[in-house]
Image (cartoon, rainbow over all chains, first blue to last red; front, top):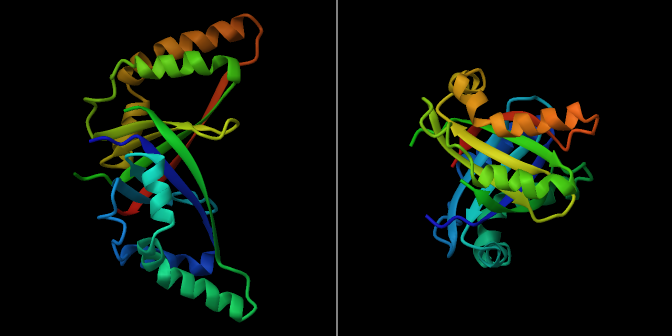
Length: 109
Length: 109
């Protein structure tokens, strides 16, 4: 298996949104699974209460990952979450989760 | 494959120690590979210059990971790195890398 590139999405999630956040991932659309260059992903729940969730995805290359983030499938895969967040904004509430990507090369296995 | 528990070691590494650090991992002893409950590991090199390396390891359970960190095999697997760090200390130099573990459950794949 050729897993060269890794994207880690660091997600902070307000406590009262965590159940919804976990439910969205547990029932995810699997839109990513057949995307070219995608290899594997894991959603990691922190054992420390105030810590980040990590979404770790493995790709053949950075170009494959970038193509995914710009794809219609990406929008489709996130549409329930995006709708949730838009609703919070529309109601003038603080957005309940924030995420930021960091990217890595696999040094060794 | 039953991968339930994940340990992430966040490693900060001084710039002038990175080559040695990478060389140690690239020629690692593979002491961990046959340890009970061990499933997989990846050493991730950040694409952002000032960021952490991540050592991500997958285990059947937290108990298996804890057993590894207390094992003779763990000491054997880290002995070159530990000798390096001891030498820095003996010479009164700042230790060139620091690490801290965070632990996670796999929420979904």
